[in-house]
Length: 223
Image 1 (cartoon, rainbow, N blue to C red):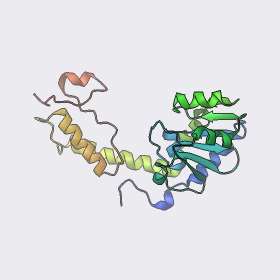
Image 2: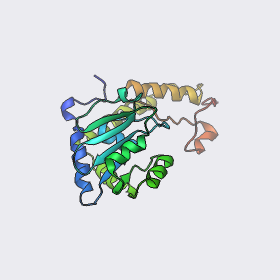
Image 3: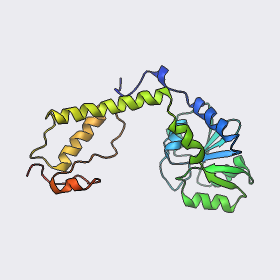
């Protein structure tokens, strides 16, 4: 089993998250929440959309089942969930029409903070929506972690702690290697410990240590 994978029984179903969001939408008088390529989408339904010029958008109504408007070529990547309908669109379809059909031309909506401006502008030009940021609703939900999220955070932290311990005990060679070589090894170990990806590894030697966002390079450590 992947070291970071808790037993399936510990995973909170996405349905619980949809229910929490819809419950928050009612007092906020929000008719629809619309999410695209950001962490909110992945948190809510497990979909990690690619940042393409083709629109992928999850539309969550205040009541009922959500809709995932997604390019046909991307649809096979989505794991079907009972909480949303998959609505694929092809090259001859305007996806904004699909969105507007489901939301209506007059509505109070919350749009994901990282939705591309081209989509937001076109949607607003074609509707009479009252728009707010989706983070106003999603933020308070995501900041309160459920037990499965807390368990995953502990596992992820413990995995990196093990790598840090190996560094402290000299099990990862530093002297005579470049920053990039050490960063690559640490990255491999992060993946070996069960992380799905490595966003960055900072290894900064000598004068480079003054830069908090240094990009590991050919600087040899200890020279």
